[in-house]
Length: 191
Image 1 (cartoon, one colour):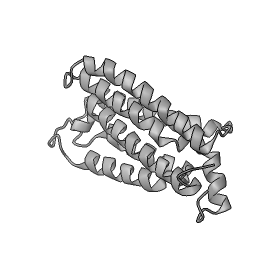
Image 2 (cartoon, rainbow, N blue to C red; image 1 turned 45 degrees about the vertical axis):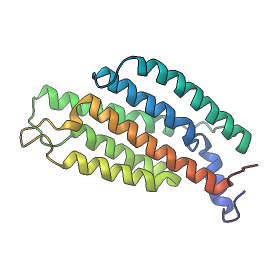
Image 3 (cartoon, rainbow, N blue to C red; image 1 turned 60 degrees about the vertical axis):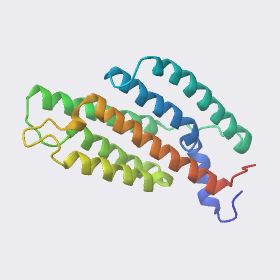
Image 4 (cartoon, rainbow, N blue to C red; image 1 turned 135 degrees about the vertical axis):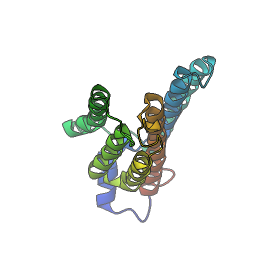
C-alpha cells in the first residue's frame, strides 16, 4: 500500500474499484476504434477479427493482473452509475435526431458537446477521475465549438464514425488515468 494514501482515499478507491481497472478497458476501446475504422472503410476487415482476439486476451490478462496484485472487491449496487453510463449516449442520439430532423445547418458538433457534458457529469461522480474527465471534456468541447465544417456545417465530429472515434480516445485516456490512480493509491504491488 502506498505510504501517502490516506484512509478516505483508499475507501474511495475500493468503492470505485471496478471503474479504476483501466488496463482492462484500453484494449477494448482500441478494438472499438478499429471496428469503427473498418465500418467507415479506413481499415481492412481482417484487423477487426485479429483485433478482437488481441483485445480479449489483453483485457483478460489485465483483469488477472489486477486480481493478482490487488485482489477482488465486491462492487456495491449503485443505480446512479448505470444512469451515468446511459445518459450521454441517449443525449447524443436525441441531439442528433433533433438536428437531423429539423435539417439545421449547425456549424458546431451537438454530439460532441453532449459527450463533453457527459464527461463533466462523470467528473461529479467519479472524483478520482476528475482531472482526466475535465481534460477530455475540455478537448471535446473545444473541438466541437470550432467551426470545422464551415458556417453551414456539418461539423466533422457530428459524423458517427468521428464522434465514436473521439469517444474511444476519451475512454482510453480516462482508463489510463484510472490505472494511475489505483496504482498511486494502493502501490505498484498491491497486497
